[in-house]
Length: 450
Image (cartoon, rainbow, N blue to C red; front, side):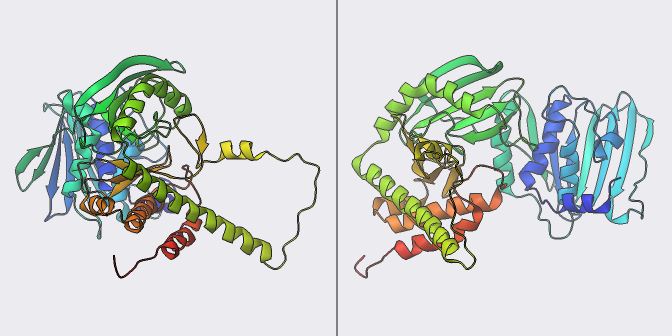
């Protein structure tokens, strides 16, 4: 076993429930299972994941940090880091009971009872005539909530490709079994279907225009691999409005994903170019459908408020640094200056508009979501999508209440900033967010007549 602080650090990462369960479901499907049951026991405070797959070949490798012995058929679930993440994020104690090739292996580990050498007991083994499969019991630590309905809504979307292909995920609570249903794309009135290669890796797209006001779960395009959706994004739109667009992008072998398989990590620029080349005419048509004078004006004013506040924050920060004691005026060093145009192209907050020009800062766009979220932020295109189906957003938009809309956009953006990793692309550092929010508030004026 590793040093104690490694286990403690992993136990403090506090992955959300949907990611913990998704890791274990990935493992089950990857090992040939076509049915996974998630059994909740509120009295014992346990969550059990049971499948009918081929079983774990080596429990020791599966549970040891820094070791893994993959036996699955894909790169998504390998009873490697995912099982460890799920265990240490939810509690100290885990029970594993697996049958593979006529042998039953069992192991119970409790991190809180490890000795000074931080080693656990060995698994027990015995012959078995039962069908193969794996049963994992997570004992929740104090303060960890049980799984709620929103988690299953997320899982139904994440595993839509697998569920549509015939795989099953069943929630069991109080002896009541409830199957998880897939969340499908809205109906498309006009679409593009194509299969192509990006840097030698296969991509298939089915992207099109939705009916007016059609609701979607998440952002415009779903990026899928095998039995699950990896990410949702407007990647491929190059800054054009996706209000009336939806689609599925299926990634074949060779694509690289993050540790918890919730985002892509390579070839995103090339992928965006390839998608945009194939759907540009649909984006143009969809943007014209959703374009009206009032909506465009509101979006423009919101973007100006947001990005002016960002600019003001940065100017104030530069002024404070310049006026601080001990500041030394820079001297000429003989280096060539980088032109403003080159700097502008390098900025992570830049987006590409329809005419190919780059516009700095964060974009605002509308979305029709089928959940109760105020909106979402897409860091790849630096766009805040406000959900016009939400009664707050709908009311503020109808009343042209830009200050309220700006506050909601700030709330959506701040939520993303607070819950995502610092190494992902953002428009400005998290440390600048507080002053930016204050600048927005100062810029808003209310009258008693409104």
